[in-house]
Image (tube, rainbow, N blue to C red):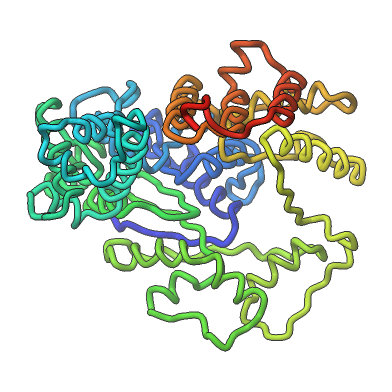
Length: 480
C-alpha cells in the first residue's frame, strides 16, 4: 500500500484527519483491539492532540471527538527506534523498553576520561584541565558530544554508516564506532541506534513483518516540524506491502507549499508582502522537512486539506490571512473587532512563576470580557509539562478569586521523570557557573517543591533572598 503524505495548514485539520483514520468504525475487524501507534514530533503537539481527539475532533463531519475510546499511543518520533528494537528482541509491545543510548553521555565521558584510550585522547584539546576545574569542562563537552551523536545517528544515515564501518577518519566517527561496538556487544548484536533499525527494516522482510504484526494495519506520523531521515526511511520500508498503510500528516505554512518544494519553486524575492516576509523568516524548518520527503522518493503526495473558514476581524485573523494570502500585494485586513489588538500578545517574563501569574491575569481579563468563555474552553500548552503542571495548579487556585481549576492532559510518557529532571538540573549546575537563576530553576522543579512542601509564596520569598544577596553566580570563592 502506498506511503502517503497529507499536508494541512491548520492543526485542527491535522487532528480531524487523524480522528477519522483511527476511529473504531475504520478498523479492520481482525484488528479492532490492536493499539494504534501515532508518532508525534514533540510534547506540545502531543498534549494538544490528546485533548482535541477526545473532545473536539470531527468524525465524518461531526465535532464529537473520539471520547475515551481512542485505543492509541502517542509516541515521540525519537522513541520509535527503541520501541521497534524492543519488538525485534521479542518483547511484548506493551512492556516498558529502554533506549540503548540512554546513558550515552556517561559512555562518552568514560572514554574521554581514560588516559589509555587513543579515541578519548583525540579530544584532549577540548576537555579543559580536569586537575584544575574538577572535570566540569570534560562533563559539559561529553554532554555536547552525546547530543551531536544522537543528532547524527537520527538524521544522517550516510555519516552513521561510514562511521560504523570505520570509513570516517575524524575523531567523532571513531568515537561513535567505539561506543556502537561496545553497546552492540553488550546487547548481543541487537540494534543500538535509529540507523540500525532503519538498516534492518530496509533489508529484512521478516523484521518488517514483525513490526507490522503489532499494528492495526497502519502507522501514522504527525509533524509540525522536522522529522529524522532514519524515521522517514524506516516508515517507507514498512510500507513496502499491499496490506499495510503508512500515513504522514504534515503541517505546512500555506496551501501548495509542499508542491512548490517538490517542483523546486522558491518564493519570489520581489514579493514584499507581510505574509511573504513572515514565511521567509519562519518557514525554514518546513523547507528542510519537505525537502527530506522529496529526496526520500518513497513518500507519495496524498493531497492537501484546507477548511473553508472565514477569518475573524482581529489582529490574529489579520495575521492568519496575511500568511494564507501571502501573494496579495497591497492587501489590507479588517481588525475592527479587535481595537486593542488583544488577540495576539507576547509577554517576556523572568521566571516560570511569573509566566503563570501573567497568564492568570490575562485569562481573567478574557473571561470578564467574554461571559461565554469558560475555563474548560481554554487549552494551555507548555514546553515542559512536568515543571508547569504543579505551579499552574497552585497559582491558578490559591491566588484569590476567581479560582481557576486546571486539568492536566497527557503528562504521562512525556519522556522525563521528576527525578530525571532533578538529576539533569544538578549535573547542569555542576558543569556550569552555578548562577542564581539556575538555582532558582532547580528550586521550582516539582520534585523539590513536593519534598519541602513549598508553595508559590515560599518560592517567591526564596527568589527575593536571591535578589537581595550580594552574589549572582558561583558555589563558593574557590569556584569563582
